[in-house]
Image 1 (tube, rainbow, N blue to C red):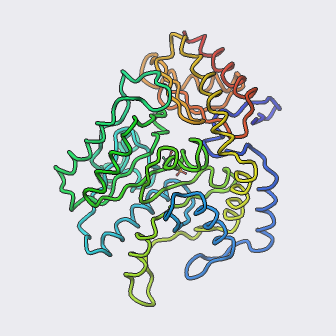
Image 2 (image 1 turned 90 degrees about the horizontal axis):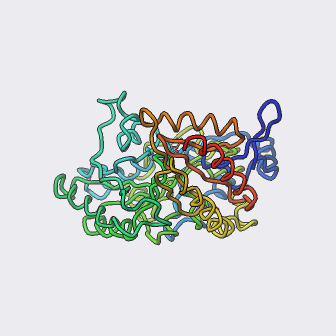
Image 3 (image 1 turned 30 degrees about the horizontal axis):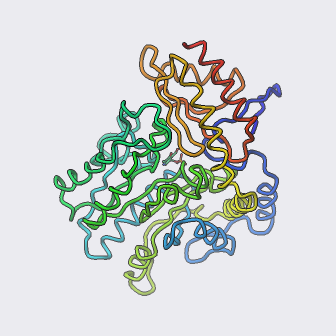
Length: 404
Ligand code: PLP
């Protein structure tokens, strides 16, 4: 649960690094598995062939994904997962004879990584301002934050109707031209926006009515963060593809993946001419043996220690302690689901300045977390004890009291 600075000062990790180290840091099982793998097979290409651990990792992930999302494409980051999902979707529609479906729909305040596909989906202007012209901006649904929902526990009760924005965009762009809708089930990087009750269900229904694919970008929400393996299961909405990364290896190796519905996989693969490549896409490091070893070892820890259930159990205490900060005048909203939370602060000067300062002050006070704009984002490891939660919230309170 701790980092140590070069002088040996402990800094409690309130963000699992960057939503990655769900089983805590320095797990010897993962280090040993990676070391063993590098001694046995350090590298092989994943083009035309693979290695046993790549299949083992794919099987382990497919045990966790919703039913039928069991075809796994390995990449090296969340950004690559997003761009890969976009390419798979375009290939799928083309294989079905609907190659005109090229429009992707995203959402205000969305973050889908830094590669050009993900930048085209970005709902955060800073992430695409400097890259205009190359990344065509996607049409955006409105984001789901509403002032009247401030300090809601879990999913806000109102706002499901915001999903009807999708119908409006379909009316403008034509369903026959739209390939897919990308959403983070909980918008993470923008400051943890929990979906209103019924919102994701309504997106699913509209997608189904018009032949659009639905993608959940679970780079942050995957692997137990919301109390289930994936947010798709927590919210009981089944997407067609899931993008994932971060905790896939507990953060110990760079890796990401796209889980694809079997019917999408089969359409693409079976439409290819015999003895030819099915999808002209892949990375040198796809299914790197060391990353696969870390993935299998991490998922083994999650299962052995029943960390998803443990995280779900801890979340009530985590949220109770976090909502105790609501009395601080500087705190304007608290949002939380599972072991993921955002504490929004009143801006001080230009938006984001307080958050920027806070990051440094917290680090000096012995707490690591992520700030984005003026929101402090917390995502403790699933192995945290209540005493760790106390320490995290106590440091946060102490520092925020100086802001109030
Ligand atoms: N998608 C989402 C939802 C993310 O939160 C992130 C990173 O935080 C990414 C994609 C990009 O992942 P990476 O930084 O591994 O490229």
